[in-house]
Image (spheres, helix red, strand yellow):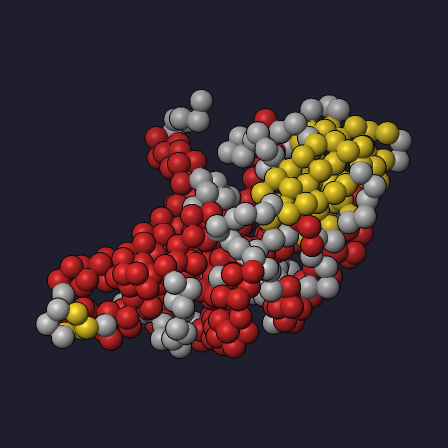
Amino acid sequence: MAYPFRGVDFMEIDSLFSEQERLVRQTAREFVEKEVVPIIDEHNREGRFPVQLVAKIGELGFLGANLRGYGCAEMSNVEYGLIMQELERGDSGLRSFASVQGSLVMYPIAAFGSEEQKQKWLPRLQSGQAIGCFGLTEPDFGSNPGGMRARASHDGPHFILNGEKTWITSGSIADVALVWARTDDGVIRGFLVEKGTPGFAARDIKGKFSLRASVTSSLTLADARVPCENMLPGAMGLKAALMCLNQARYGIGWGALGAAMTCYDTALRYAQGRTQFDNRPIAGHQLVQQKLVWMITEITKGQLLALQVGRLKDAGRADHSHISMLKRNNVDIALETARLARDILGANGVADEYPVFRHMCNLESVRTYEGTHDIHTLIIGEKITGLSAFV
């Protein structure tokens, strides 16, 4: 059952946004209501990514929205965050696509690429004419990317890449993969591996209960010859890859709020219309109100956290630990909101007539990727104590 989204603003947080920020959010919200909500359940059932929306998302300026030049929209980080919020209100898979495209492919090309690489790829990626993916995670190394086994051996005008990457969003539909590998001197570097490169293959991961409306793949590189000019000249060491993840984590912190808002809105409307026992709406029962109050309180706190991190990011003062707190907190409360909403809906909570269970399943993946909940705990812990607990 599709409800028109009413918005969630218990504390009048809208008053903290500029007119331009509200306009950006409204544009994204209308796109989601018109283009995403009517089709997403079918795509989720079939395990199919709505690739037909990519060009429309690009036309609206949502891809790499907070980047400068090369056709990018040059929005603020708060405006970008609001776009991610609205896209994930539609589906985590759609927001994941936009996050990967903008933060994990376009951002590193813009930050570390040559002018030739920027000119070749950024306009196409921004418009949606090309799709990119980010190859960092390996079958044996997720939370510990420094242990990667992928290798890039220098051979004249080429590097020869060998290795495997997995859980790669957009992998099999990507025109270019940003693959991270260790060179002969032991330094981790980023390489632009184009679709059709001999020795490079992508295969989709099947049987997912989560992110079903998203393409998730494994990448294999078997003596894949990549021209030396495809190496990002400014990306040296694991720090460059982690800087990309930081950009994506920021968008996730906003995006999770969108999923939480939809779950809360759905549960509230359902509780107001569902009668039980004394023929009164279940929204009038104490235990149901307790759940709804927890949801709106945590969503409100999450909104304030996202806005403050966004303001700090726009001012150039956002630390990676701030972004870890944003991702850790907002994904956690979004998942719990989905679980509570599913509880309020009872048996109906598992039916895709309502969006709650789809969001709940998606958020299980969002809680894991771009740094697990526990990894972000350790990042924040190191920041406040000055002591690393990673080893």
